[in-house]
Length: 256
Ligand SMILES: *[C@@H]1O[C@H](CO)[C@@H](O)[C@H](O)[C@H]1NC(C)=O
Ligand SMILES: *[C@@H]1O[C@H](CO)[C@@H](O)[C@H](O)[C@H]1NC(C)=O
Image 1: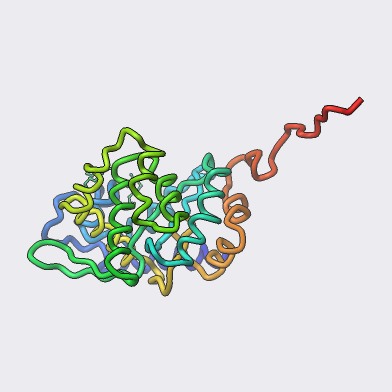
Image 2: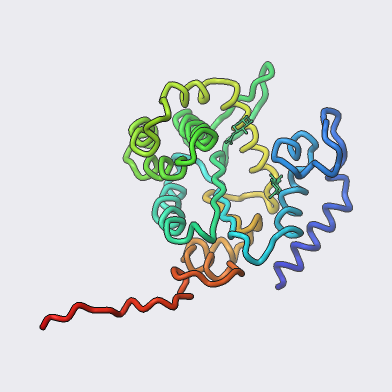
């Protein structure tokens, strides 16, 4: 309750400040600033939209949105993604959505109209982040592929094989042309902006948000049992996996 009040206050404060001021390149009317990620970014209203989207428009039956801000080679990120987030999603995907933002503690600079990235764990990590970002833009099977990569010994080397397994129709060449091209560069910039819009700003990765909100308490609960956290956060009818189950599993075949 306290967190909710705090959040409402934060949103109100933000809406009072010049957060939504029109930037010169904004081509959307204010009513449409939050209609897409691109509009929000272009109009400098990302922070405002991410928060207002989650507070004003959430319905009781909406899936719980779990945001993961991470980087592809950080050991703690890999552990959380592969042993907590992915298994939880397999069980709870009907009441949960996942927003993966591979960027983490990377740094962005702009050179000759292109963004240039430096990653905490070196160039390989930037490559891993970019492959995962492109996959999310190209296939619905991105999460299983990313899980496959992150649980392999070599995150980068496994990428092509993992893609072939889960999304055989997706050509590796087309993934790599996204990775090396303008689309990848633009998508990574969106990751940078989403990460920079975090409120409070991230202090470490993996950094978890629940319905767009990060608190120390939510982070600790997510680390301890994301499953319990998602089940208890979801306000719609209890699903079987969360224990809201009428079915009788106690049917045995007796040894006569
Ligand atoms: C806000 O929510 C709408 C509808 O759910 C979605 O299409 C849009 O992308 C969201 N905007 C942002 C900035 O997250
Ligand atoms: C992929 O990225 C492009 C360029 O930003 C965007 O227009 C498109 O909507 C994205 N597609 C998906 C499925 O995310």
